[in-house]
Length: 263
Length: 361
Image (cartoon, rainbow over all chains, first blue to last red; front, side, top):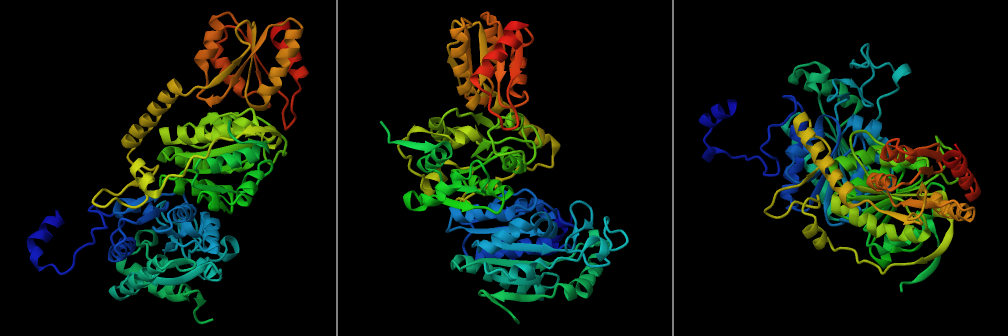
């Protein structure tokens, strides 16, 4: 209904921006205010810009973005929980000239799939991993994630994450940056147009690395929000993310062209 | 005549993987089948055929590498032994659900748990009844010689791609470790990327120009659609049950009693038949080659033709015997015999079991 109203107001001949053809017309299943939609779009825009839509294979995870393949208009595979880097490893090794990427959340990549993540990075698989970190399990209803902040309340840490019981939030991005197999490791966000532009540049660099056959894996963390899981309005969630997530998960490049930044 | 070689079963399997035109082997070492990946890394298949060989970080990773590679239309294969195969069950369920052709070899050892590294046949339930979650099947081929460790590889790939499903070669530590003469088949060339794309339009290897993108998934949140998908899988399984049952009958025509066995137990049973026939007892062997689909109709036919009893011989506590009982439907006597935990029964023990459990009572 809102679509019709918008069409009545905005004339197509006046539009200066168009959705990439590599996003399908299917309405996104994400909560309003969630960062997934923007992250999807940035990846698809980059693939379109690189002219690689017929030479890309993506791997979707289990979690909120389990249906990423419904929205990303390229060849896609849906992996078991945490296993996307294993799928991507084989795809890339069997089809060297394809762009191969995984799109994974924090539970998928940093909990159940830790072994697959670490070893794909350590082998230096020539793939791109996009890691969405919102500090919570959104899909299953807001349980504690490996990246849940200390003191943060979730449905399985109802009194806040207690380090003595539940351990520390895992900075897996810093961890994989230590491995010689990673070539580009960066942490970005998509909550403002400026942040999204920077994230887009980072995503493009990652895929360009793969096109250039750079020696190693490109890893992009996107710190994101989960307004429904965090039980906040979208605006409050973004503010909370800036105030609480960014200090623990600081934005910026961690490793560029195989060299650690600020070593 | 093809090239003759004296090889271990595991080595024959590995050589056959290269010759079958496989594009990728992804595996993790485990006794008693580590010779497979050792052979493959030493034989430089990348130089011979361009085949990829990768030692994964775990069996969980290797089966998921098969998911990724198989879903692009390439011929991919792994091998392991029982505990490793247990780890792969999640992946197999996804692969069956997503209809991806892959080949997996299990060189079975004694269980449960870490068990031992001696030959066993105690993974029959896991292989034939679905070891992972959900309603699915694997086609299961059971080699009983080093020759068949080689011959069943191209056959497994053909079946996997014909039906778009996982096919298992279910061997055991004895067949994997023993050396025999093998006649190697002529190498089958690997398909080019273009041939793969033309042959398997379902495969996810880059959206066709001007065409629709492809999705490989086992997920459908709409229960009615998932029900439809399950019906489709079941229809496929019914077609396989009609067309792909394989077995061998040895001295069954005049036999009063039938030993039912596969793999190592089939070879031991053949010797037991000799011993029993020397005593004047007419015994034959129904050697199963496919464990699923299982030859229920063949056994029913044997019952209707007057066979008096069946002894299921397997190195397990009695797994395959349940399928024999299902086929016989209580019409004649069925019993199980087998040593377990990695112990191999002797022909004498098998012969004695038939006399005591089937004839004697």
